[in-house]
Each structure stands twice: as C-alpha cells, then as structure tokens.
Image (cartoon, rainbow, N blue to C red):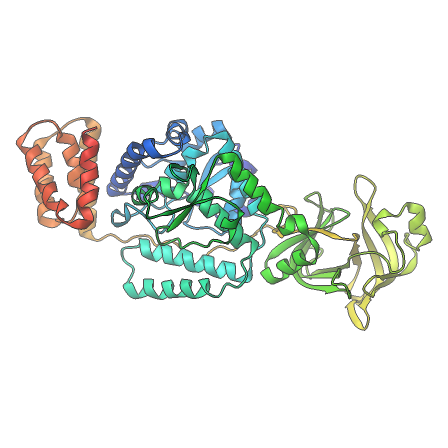
Length: 581
C-alpha cells in the first residue's frame, strides 16, 4: 500500500493486514474515453433504474454524491460516505472473499479502480469502478440494507475456505482480467476458461466460504426485491449493468424465492445469470443470513469445525469452552472412541487469545513452531479443570511447583512440573504452563521436555471454529495477495489520438461552447480513422441536439449508418432516446 493514501475516521479502524490490498486510485490514468463510458452508463442507468430499482437507489445516488458526468474520486466519495458511517478504498480488481467481507465488516466498500472498456460497456466480467461505486455505494444509503451488508461481512469473513477455494479465486480473477483486456489472445482466454470449468467440476463439497459467497452473489451482487411477479433491482451487479438490468426482468430469467437454498446454487461470473432470487424485503436477507450462520463452525465448533480448518490449510481459530482462542494453521486432531476431539495441533506460527485479544507473551514469536493441547476432562473425574476451585486444583495436584501427571479422556497424558496458570477476568483458569513436560497419546509422543515450556490450553469442549485470527494484531499479514495483477492496457498511437478527440469534445461540453467548426473537424477525423467508434459521435450529437443546424442533421445521419451494425444499434438508439426525455 502506498503511503500517499489518506485514511479517514472509518478507514483508520481497518486492521493492518487489510492494508496490503489497498491501492491508490490511478485517477490520472483514466482516459477521456473512460470518462465518456462512465457518463453513458450512468445516464442510461439513472434513467432506466429510476423505474425498476429499489427506491433507495436513486436517493442513494444523491446521498453519496456520485456524479453522472465524472468518474468519482475516492477522496470525494469518502467525504460524503463518512456521513452515513461508511468509507471506500480502491483495490486491484478481485480480492480474496475473506478479505472482501472483512472490509465490509468495518463499513468499508472495496472499489476496483479499473473501468470497463467501450467494448464491454453493457457488461464487464471484471469488477470495475462502475460496478462498485455506482452499484454498491448508492444502495447502502438505506440503513437496513447497510446493516445487512456490515453483518454479512462480519459473519462472512469468519467462513472457512477449502484448499481449492483460492485456486478457484485465482482462476476466476485471471479469466476476468483477460476477458476485459483487449490485448488478450483468444487462446489465453480459452485456456483459463477451461481451467475454471475443470475446477468447478472438481471442487468437492462446498466449503462455508463457497456457500456464503453464493449467498453474497445472489443478494448483494444479483439480488431482486419485492414480488416474484414484479421485483425491483437492488444487487450491484444488476444496478451497474446496462444489459443485465434489462435482461434480468424478462421472462427469460427464472425468478425464485430467496431462501437458504441459494447457498448451494453456484454461479458463473463471466456470463449473464439464468436465474435470480427475490427477497420480499431487506429484513428477510438478515433472517436467511442468521439461518446460515447457525450452521457454521463459528457457532457449532466441535470435531467438524476443527476438521474444516485442517482441510482448509489456512489460518484459523478454535475457541474452547473457557474462552481461550488458539489461532494458527491446524494440522491434526486426535479423537477418542466416540469421535470426540481430545487433542489438537497446529504447525508454524500460532497465537493465543481471549475475547479476541492476544494473551500477553503468547504471540507468534513465542509459539513460532506450532502448538498442541488436550481437550476435555481428566479421565474418571467428572469435574472439568475449568470448573475446579483453587481447592479442587490443589486436590488434583494442579498448583505451582507441583510435579504432576494428568491423564485426560482419550488417553492423553501430561506429565511435568506446573509453573503457573493464567486466568480470565472472571477468575476461570484458561492456560497452565509446565516445565520438564512430556505429553503422550499411548505410545505417541506429542511433546517432550527438550522442546521447552509446555503451555496447555484449558477447555472441555471446542465451542467455535472460524477462519482467520482471533486477535487482528497477532498476524501482520493475513490472506494471500493474488499473483495475477490487472493488466494495464497499452494504447496504440491511434487510440491515444482518439482519446484526445474525446477530450476535446468534453472540454466543449464543459464550457457550454458549441464550436461547429471544431466538431466538424473531429467528425471528419472519426470518419477517416475511427469508423467503428459510436460513443464520441453520440457525445457530439448531444451538444448540437435541437440546434436545427445542418451539422446536427449530418451527425444524426452518421449515427444512423453506425446503427446498421447490430452490436451498436441499441446502444446508439438508447442514447438518442435519452436526449428526447
């Protein structure tokens, strides 16, 4: 992250590990054609969406201060978003789902800094500033929806991924980058498309993250609200797409009631959606989210939760019944004959915490080579260690300076000299440290004296398991940065000259000065060198519309010729209709 990025009162709350995803908005790199694309899409959308979008959208456009004429600057957006408790940061295209949702949990929108090319003006396979700023930002002006978005981020960032999820993320990210880049070859796109399809068919059981990502897609990105017969649009993917915002309301797209079943409905980000889900109101979104959260390991814990973390091969946390939290990459869980977890192990850097605050002296520097601890009660003793009074602990030989042997259920044996214990604010013991300690499971050695101090977490049950660290300060860098960067488009000399023509027209519009001689010269150059550019002639026609001049008639005739090309017909036709309103 560049040091020149300024933080406000909202973005200052972001944990350090999210800073790695933030980039400075490359505002000077937007061409005059990019600005014209923004202007066309926004004018079309505001006109059409005023009739078919949820009522919060148009109000939100005004509240968030998004102009229809210029690509927004992050600084300007943030000055206004701050008033509704939100902020925005610029990022490089897709970021990993966990990170995306964690930003949301802090009331921060991530906005892809790129903008779609003219070729993809109706729909882009890659996230862009039109999608993020014009799609997501306005609708969060609705307080109920904004809280849903924040809560979704809070729950979603704790969802556990599978090892294949990041592979899929990388493949989809690369595919979207290639499809948006006009310099990509057909072979490049086809090869990555095949990779995505192969991964989609071999993902196995959907992870928590895959399922909650589906819920996000069918609500936040592609959600409809109201009745099945006459729904309104609120999803950002629809709000920012000229083509799909119309397509989605036709009978060709199946409309289904939004339920938790949407969690298992996958999607293809590079294609228009064949079905969409309709929520009756924003409150129902939160109801389904809570229903899904109740099935997640963060609320279920247990053996299944630990197994999900082991399979993910990513940083995760388990919380025991005492409230102690163990954060690391989980590698193993030992169970008893009833499949109850009796010992857990991590590899590499591990941190301990309570109430999401790291325990002093138990960060990743101290536990740099992994961690292991028994779970459960002592064998043959009904009273769990966590429930023992100081007198009970003394009776069972658990006190400072005492050489003791603790035999846990599942045949986990801890033999060593007690050094000290740590208690929480309520006085419950959460951690016991031993020296000269040996830990075994039958004949398997789990810890031996020469490894140093043995710190044993106390807890009879695993009550929670979730992705990421308990304390945001424990690990400096969480999440992986994609190796696939968005491609900076290389413009030819001819394209650069075309952008200059766009800039000349923009200056005429801004000055309210219609110079027919200049416009005639620009049109001549367009006809000679850029016969397939339709947007600039449309921008020029807007300047001379209703002047009843010969040049107006000439421009209209030229646009009529361009309209004969099927791919431009509706784009030009819709632009002309807008002038008559």
